[in-house]
Length: 480
Image (cartoon, rainbow, N blue to C red; front, side):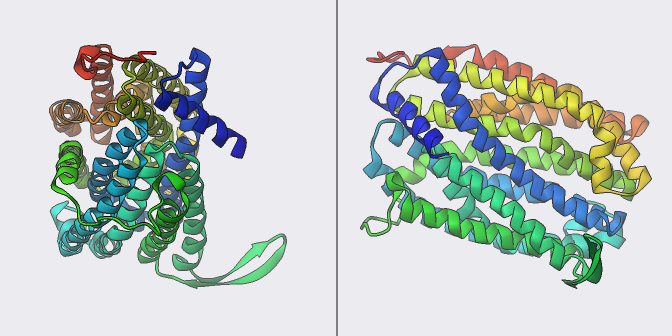
């Protein structure tokens, strides 16, 4: 692991110093950055998968309660991520130009700004947790569980924000290994805490022997508490590593300004606000989809939620490669290596499409088994597997959209890609879903999703092959 870390650092240093990278070295660096990022993304979604599987054993209503608010939690996650990205992209550019002093200054300012922002968001989340299930037109039987899950999630948003910020900054600096390892640890902690908090005390059989296992029997509330506890523990560790151990961004023991400057905030706003509005609008569209699906009944809600989680296991590698694309484009941009940056864009997008295409095949083949792990209810399993197989066809083009987007974010070019995402999901997906749900039910909603993702991937590929949009007309001393 240390050897791979050393190779990654040496190759990134070649970008900053203006040295040439062979095609083989470019693929090697892409792989070295992508693999730990993929592991981190899969671990994050695995935590949701585990929560869903454990809660699913309690019945369809418990599953539907978490599924109902899942799009709302993703909305808040996206807003927190946008806030963190507004600062971490600045750090990627500064590290690309080898300005580590200013990078540490940005980090200090980001800590204060992100804490203030996430606290305000937490207050909003807790305030709306009560009426949220009613707004989503859910069955009254799941209102209480859905509300308490979202309240607990909202209460711990500042801890989640610090984790997002630290992880994003480490990745933009080129350190994918530590965020990846801590994400795996978070998943393990979540499993352990779920085991004790969701279920009541019971006897379990292990290796032919009966053991008494204590449990809180908290159900959905226990799943929420286990998740936020795991996130908080890992978030503290992530921030400590970033600020006290990681040398390029170590600020412990140094003096410096923590109050954000107008320049830093303006740059963060220019980068983060388009991302934030995009996340709000996209998750708003997803909430609209939930609004469309909710009247179809508890089975449809649960099948939809499980299928979304299951499909996430397929597209998380795309997001991992997208994070590598953000790091590479950000550091190349900061170093003024525009031709090299474009080459990394092509390499990362091709890699993402290949991997997610193969995973799409696996998703189609094993859809019944994947849904079956999360729910023992026959109706949920059958419907969930059917809609997963519809979505599997879109995975390669979804990968193109994801990785291209990460590539543009690394440069700080967020406005047009955000508009493209918004237009695609609202004008194509939502419109088609509303038209098809009446005749095809939940299947119609997922057919609309499949068509929209293919359209979105196409327009992002067109933009990728229009370098005049994202490459400034500047003279490069080291164009390679």
